Image 1 (spheres, rainbow, N blue to C red):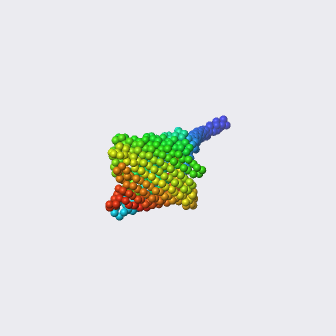
Image 2: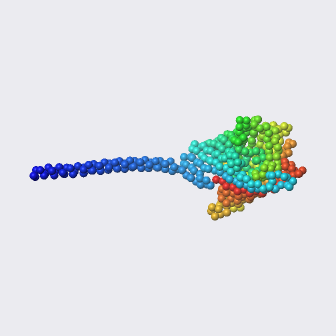
Image 3: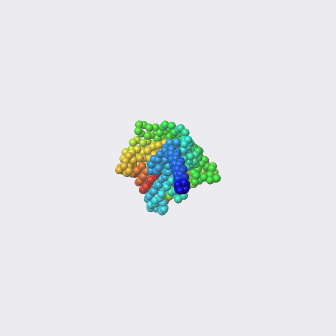
Length: 433
């Protein structure tokens, strides 16, 4: 019996042990699978960590400064910002009762509405592209590629062709709602071409070859001009002086057979031109300008003259003339900005953002335009202007303008009278970024 029981017990024990071994094997397989998943997750985490570190390394040198708009830059030479401006004008023009013209009376407009981008790239390259929307159709203003090496900058594209101090100073930083009369009357505008600027210390030389504005270019427009400007800008202690001269030689090359010079009454809201030569048959035009300015603490002065001479005119070639003299004083103690041969931004010492008042400037100007010469009677304008400009912040401006304009031989007759005066009051609200 004993011999029979012992094998039976051993067999039962073996049968009991068999499921336990199978269960242990299953547990080992589950643990191995779990460990494999952990190893896979760890590998994914390490990969993600590497990608994050790579991304951090690529953006660690990126800096963002905020000056009315974000300005991004990197240590290896990339820079980028969005730029723009909005200028809303409201004005009234009061003339003789004998003149029945819709350009008189009250009017308002979006004077400028621009949006664009500006930036720099490694290797000395840069760019600027800005589009104007104020007239209801999108048109490029500045649109060019630049290359800078040392003191030399080369530009290709559309930009101002170095006409003079008043024209080259941004509309954001001029003393009055509109620039001096001759800048518009003589057709100063941006044109496409190839140009270069050399700046060294107090000397600036600019020159280029230009065609026409992008909006006017087509397969029949083959006009070309040579334009140059020289500026000396010495410092005397804290005072900034400015002296310059420019020359412009333009050939229409059959793209036009006439030219016209005319001007509004110191504000763009009126389309009435009280001085106007009408169309003059010509094959080109040459012009020359002189400029001088000084900034002495809160006081500034500026003056320019410009002569415009259409060429190829039957009989004598006429020479038309424009000039202005202005002075200004900033009551709150700031100085007018100056940079690269032009006036620049006035920056309030203590703006609204710091609990201050901002800056307040008073300016006065005599603005002269003579469109009478060689038998052409376009009229003579003498404008006596005053402006009060308040900047609560660096990038916000409110400007109040008044002009008393005296006309001789005006192109618009008041009954039978062509010698009379006109008054203009205008207000500008402006922001830029």
